[in-house]
Figure 1 (tube, helix red, strand yellow):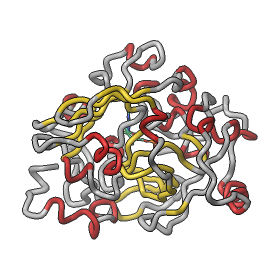
Figure 2 (cartoon, helix red, strand yellow; figure 1 turned 60 degrees about the vertical axis):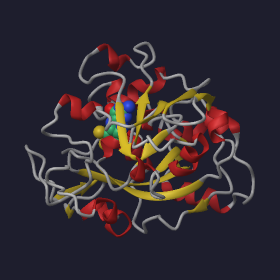
Figure 3 (cartoon, rainbow, N blue to C red; figure 1 turned 45 degrees about the horizontal axis):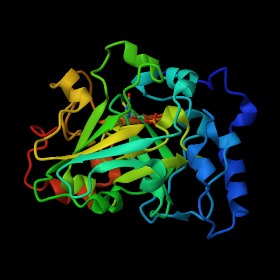
Figure 4 (tube, protein in one colour; figure 1 turned 90 degrees about the vertical axis):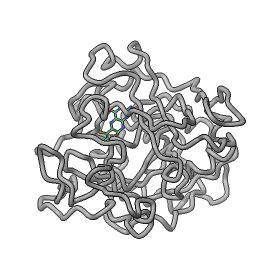
Amino acid sequence: MTLIRTPSDIDPSEITPESVYRERRRFMQAGLALSGAALLGEAPFAQATVTPFTGLTRSAFSVDESQTEYKDVTGYNNFYEFGTGKEDPAANAHTLRTSPWSVTVEGECAKPGTYTLEDILKPHALEERIYRLRCVEGWSMVIPWIGFPLADLIKRFEPTGNAKYVEFETLRDPERMPGQRRSVLHWPYVEGLRMDEAMHPLTLMAVGLYGAALPKQNGAPIRLVVPWKYGFKSIKSIVKIRFVEQQPLSSWTRAAPDEYGFYSNVNPEVDHPRWSQRSERRIGEFLKRKTLMFNGYAEQVASLYAGMDLRKNF
Ligand code: MTE
């Protein structure tokens, strides 16, 4: 795999290196409310043009590892709605209008409805969580996300006892997402979690990274981050949340059921049918490193799968 360079249409001045970002954070005042403009910002490269989030606390769930450079986090992406190449999302996602944005909540819950992004976010205090993200393709990153626990959002909709799973959908709009004019996947992109996975405190609704709103190529304005699962479970640009009784059929399972299962937990013991999952290359590093069970989050999540055959439930 070659390291992807910053796409040519990003002015280097638009990118905030980690050192600058860290410096700036030292001057941020704690206790200020987040800026609405930050969330609704329309710039594709939000870091430079959008008000940074302020007053963030760093979650204890964060890993203490060096963070992947901003240019790689925002320049080397999978977001098939904008093309299948790693540089395509950064080049093409400017067509995604993220304001206004709403999320429709359906299915087995007491409070279904269509909620504006502001409604969704208002009650939640944001925090910074530095998580590993391990892609099924064999590369990984460490990203300082900004968000809040999905569990806190789910509780507001009061799921019924029949809600065994949560299904998520990305926007389907071939105008704003030109990659959807090709049927490389079934659109809209769908993902799902078992209810206990969705309610786990590690599962994050992310609205930002590196101190500011999510760049479009990273799934603006709101996406999931499930750090113990392969990256494709972390669905971007969510417009629908549905509480269901049956296990959802996610886009990747639908496309290749023998290769991508519902659980997709990071597991070095279970190979992808076409390649090993034993090691990974951290973007920005030369040597490969061993992939850890549940991506290093076994202590927190292994109990969710006690008694399950993880070869069958891959
Ligand atoms: N969500 C949507 N809607 N479309 C996608 O193609 N790609 C997934 C996931 N979420 C994808 C998606 C994959 S394969 C990965 S590895 C991660 O997003 C990448 O997230 P990142 O670009 O922020 O690193």
